[in-house]
Image 1: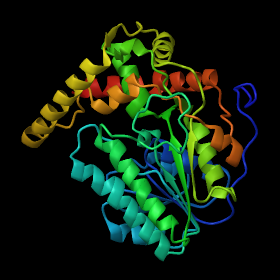
Image 2 (image 1 turned 60 degrees about the horizontal axis):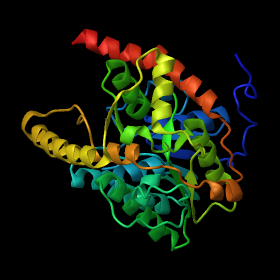
Image 3 (image 1 turned 90 degrees about the vertical axis):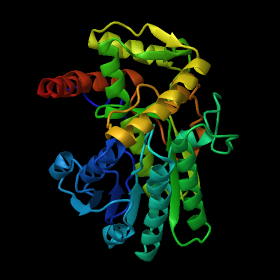
Length: 360
């Protein structure tokens, strides 16, 4: 196996102090990596999981599992008892859930978790947000002071409202709070982004927006975890928000072509203008919501406004503050991150898709 240096990975970062850390969303993509890192560093970890969650990875990590749900305030009170830290990765990322469903988890769930953390005398709470809170401005140097002019999807709106809940508690001074805003996170186990894109590429129906010219705003998942660990332990972090992006000029065209080449598939050919794609996505969302109510449809829409906005707008956010205040650097370079991601897609994700089709 190649050394860390050979793979473009630098030395380990500073760690938070001793104390139990609750992670929400730990059965998901970023949360699972945070749990892995903390356990690898010998930190005690408790993970909030739903009864239906796939906990196979977490069970191998020797973490404590707390059964609960962001929609159940009582379960959050129980889960946070005895914790010194909270890393809140849990959220509903949906293209077509109702406004009420998204807000109940992303906003009310965050509020309830903050209240439970206050009652349990948690020391520090790190909230995983997203650069979507800026409203897809399309700039190359958007920093943490940018204020959105308007929102075009409810996921972005609710993530900003969740940040408002964090700032409300922050003003009391009773809890150390840090907001981490990743851009486009990729890496192994990225089922909802890389996995779906890889499947679409191999099936020949991956769609580009504006010919894929927009900057993708990529950040490798381990680099996001680095920022999260720093946010847990850095003395200057409380009260601040940090963009996390690797600062790459990689466009969606390049990233998708690199995925296709690495998988031995044809590069994406089809493209739609932004305006046409956004209008089509809006129509599909309405149709899918109607079908969901009448037929219990569980498949995602073929195209969504959130996907169009991410794929069709530059995601080149500034990471200067994370570098300056936290001393963060993107340790895993693009070539190494792409190689690891492709290995996962080839070895696990596409095999899982093929197995699912054979069961139908």
